[in-house]
Length: 339
Image (cartoon, rainbow, N blue to C red; front, side):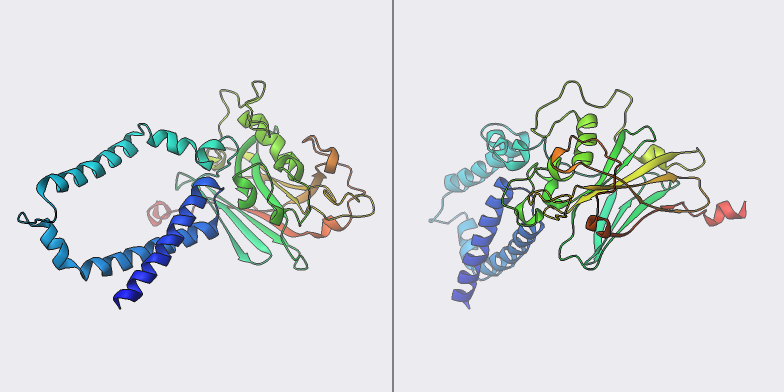
C-alpha cells in the first residue's frame, strides 16, 4: 500500500505541477483548470494518507527532545514559510516580479471578463443560454437563448453584448472562452485555417464597439481618442430597473471562419460575421424579443462598421436557428400582494 501511495502521489503531483505552469503561462482553460483542481484534491487525499501513516515520525520531530531536528531548525522552517506567506500577500519582490511574468498580467489589456452577475451554459450541443441577473432583487433579469442549426459540426465564434439606443456598448455579456483571454483566435476556433486570425478579424463589430468604450485597440495599445466618457457606465443594472421606460439593444455577432460561398471565396475568412439585434423594452407587456439579422462585418475588408447589404450572404444565414431575448420581471412578494 505504501508503494502504491508513493507512486500515485508522484503522478498526481506531477500533473498538479504541469497544469500549474500551464495556468501561469497560457490563457485560461477549463480543461487545464479541471485537471489542476482534481489533481490538487487527489494530492491532498494522498498526502493526508501519507502523513497519517507516519504520525509517529512527526510526533518525534515535534517533540522537544527530538535530536533529528532541534529548536533552531524548527524555528528556521517556520520563519522561512512565514516570510514566503508575508511576501506573497504583500506583493513584495521577488513575488511581484514573478506574477508580472504570468499570462494574466502580460495580457491584461486583452483579457475580457464578463460581470460576475452573468451566467452562461450550453443546454445542448447546439444551444447556449446567457443570463444576466440584476444587483437588486427588484430589477429585471435578462436572458438570451442562442439556438444554432443542428447541422453544424462546430458552433461559430460568438459574442453577445448590450448597447444603448444611441449605439454605445453598455456591457459584454458573453464571449467565447477561446477568444476571451487573447486577441489571437485559436486554430480550433478558426476551422483549421492555417493563417492567424484575430478577434478584430472574426468579430469586428464587437471588437470595434469594445475598442471605443475601453480605449484598448486590437494591438493592446491604449487609444487616447477612444474610451468611455466620464458618465458612461459599463453596467447593465440601471437599464434593468422596471417602471422607468428603460430600453436597450441586445446584440449577438457570430462568425464561422472558413465558411466560404460563391461571393466569399477567401478560405481564411469565408462569409463575414453576422450581427443579430433586438430592441428590449423593459416595461413591455411581451417579455420576449426575437433577434433579427441586421448586418454583417465586412469579411476581409472589415473596419468594425456594420454593413447592411445582405444580398450576398447565403449559407451563413442558416447558422442561426433562433436567437431569443427575454426579460423576467421580479415577482411581487406575498406581503406586497396583500397590500
